[in-house]
Image (cartoon, rainbow, N blue to C red; front, side, top):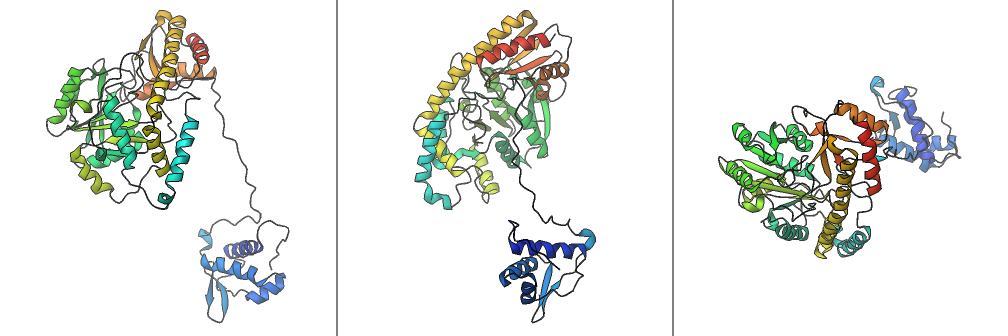
Length: 464
């Protein structure tokens, strides 16, 4: 009935299991029919009894056959119409396919980092030291709110560099901004339902809050940041803002407007979510202090990430919750497990404790500052008066506002793609109406100076 192949790399018991399973699924072995005994089938196949017993045991465990005391094994009754497809007798050879590489010659995506920027040698040393010191702790779960050492390091850094006033117990370690906002959405469900988002603004918060059942109301952004009159006239009780470097326009909210926004939050239990986007990357003057530092006890959730300076692949971020939300956080998430690797948290804590983080920030500010200036010079040279740069002086991108172009964004992006240029659509940042005139987001972090110069020269020929 069954034939085994001694030349097949698949174990004999597995071959027999596959053969019997196929006969059961195809109906060749009718329901309730008796299978040969282990001894009989072993003799018929000239195989060991262990081979037959192993196949029978696996079939029995999966329900293809059943046993009767002192009677042997029998075929289970199955619905043939719902039965899965027959197994192939020979497993397919695994193919190691290469990941398709990007065909872009010039990648102006605003979230790309310098390709040589990650401090691999320092990170490796901190990682190995952390692995050596943490070997016993790897047999248990970490603190779901984050490692205490890392929270203390972040608290100290935020106080010195961003003016944030908080305790380590207010800090929650998260796996990126998306994870942070998802936690916030769960914390605020029931007590809030409408979120004001910047327009234009980051598309991710809109998606996260909508997926959690919130209504998102786009509020226009100008040189002074979020339009506070429109905010007050809306039904929003939450405002998501990027006040120190607005995404995508790069505006800085002035102190007068920051204080008015805080007053809005304190009237009627409203809340501010401050995303300190690209806060460290300011190329002229000192970084802008945080909104949270103006009212540490206020209704402000502060969030930050290590993605733009260190690595987006590590998925390491943090948020500072106001004290009134801590009890709610612990109530909802007390049974959750940590979402960020214990070793990566301890590696980052050691990296910060030894001063590597702040030296790395200064180094990247210098590197990106040079690329930023190269981009400005290239745009001035190749575009001249046909374009105005918005949002210069900080971050990893600028916005180019074109004048005199008869082409729309879609056509420009399509033309650029044909020439190997990648552009992120500015329209993706718009929550409602599209921009009146063509705008291009030009990221420079992942390109060399020569690539920036050559890419801008080519792009200037495609936009008009």
